[in-house]
Amino acid sequence: MDFSTFELHPRIEAGVRAQGYDTPTPIQAKAIPPALEGADILGLAQTGTGKTAAFALPILDYLIDGPRTRVRALVIAPTRELTHQIHTAFSALGAKTGLRSVPIYGGVNINPQIRRLQGGAEIVVACPGRLLDHLQQGTVELSDVEVFVLDEADRLFDMGFLPDIRRILTRLPENRQTLLFSATMPPDIRKLATEILFDPVMIEVDRARPAETVAHAIYPVAEEEKGEALVQLLYRSETESVLVFTRTKRRAKRVAAGLVSAGFDATCLQGNLSQRRRQEALDGFRSGKYPILVATDIAARGIDVSSISHVINYDMPDTVDAYTHRIGRTGRAARTGDAFTLVTPADASAVRAIERMMGCRLERRPLDALQSSPVNGRAAVDPVPRRSPRPRPVSRREESGTPAPRRRRRRGGQSKRDGRAGSAVHSATFAAAGRRGARSRGRPRSRSPRRLP
Ligand code: AMP
Image 1 (cartoon, rainbow, N blue to C red):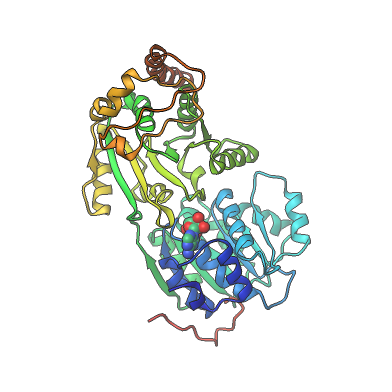
Image 2: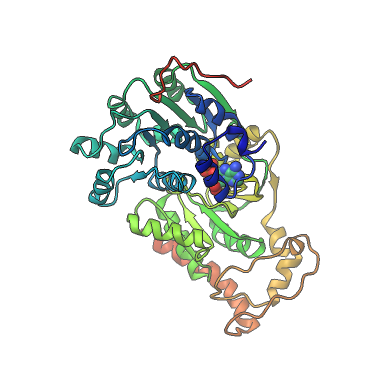
């Protein structure tokens, strides 16, 4: 199957080609045809499956021929990052359509958003809180909305946005197309879905299971060994870009600081940062300036970096769903990825729950083996950079124990002795950092939706 099957408008097909998409992902193959027909959709799909284009393409196709300069499509998403990412997808896929999308989220000055809305837009992608601000100020008008999308509905619920969503719903026309996407289907979402969707087409893709392109491993450690374990993992693994998850904002900050002190180019993304600093961290991670990003679950929502090679759970996630969400950041769109989790004895029941969800036992890798592996043995005599531009990747060949070419000499020509000291610095730095840290659509209903076979 290719995208021509959908018979999208040629200008939208051009946008698809420009993005380099050849084959529709499973959610696109399932969702685009009924969405083009005007059907409501209930989509169970995790992040990284291509669901943004699954709703963006039918929306662009519908809007391209209709009236301009009024808001005809509204997408609600839980975080600024996801909002921005969806807006970017609309802009890229619809680059040749002349349709305009405006991202709306809090934490930034409202006036530029008002100006963009006044300039005329057909698509609004919004976080609920700031959208309500605009509604109260009368700076956005939703009475012409024909397509409404609720993306990552389970997260919107988790974050307490349900009352806001209900208020927004009162401002939308009843006759509209509604598309609801969620990675999981807890009872609250099911209830909302029955209230707001009309005879929906149900679509399910890889329900609540991480992509099969991801390899999972767990490293049993004591809590106090985590810092050193993380450093070892980063040195011993062939990484491109690494997303490290912590349980709290404070821990994210502390772990990132520890990595920086240990010579890694790491940055952190957590809810206490200003919008400018969040964007800087994200842009730096995307561009490769920071190959390591340490983040909390909520801050990491909507991170769309397709080359994430490793997700490392520094702390075990709270729920199996959170594990799925985190791991969904790697192995995206048919790339391969690795998911490592540092596991303390207190995490035993969480590990069992993840294994039940995965339907298989997670590979245990003792940290000792990592430290006494041939790779590590060589590291004991090789210099470990105090400050290298990037953590040195280890090739897959090296990981499997096959002798590898000696690595190039670091900048600055540190001595071997320095290197060993460097290892000690890692632990000390982490410990020090730790101590410091201790502080319808308007398509008429009569156009009965065509079901997929
Ligand atoms: P999403 O699940 O929408 O966040 O998409 C995950 C990633 O897959 C994004 O980087 C998209 O640009 C990419 N993507 C979406 N659809 C396709 C496709 N058909 N072929 C290749 N990559 C895609």
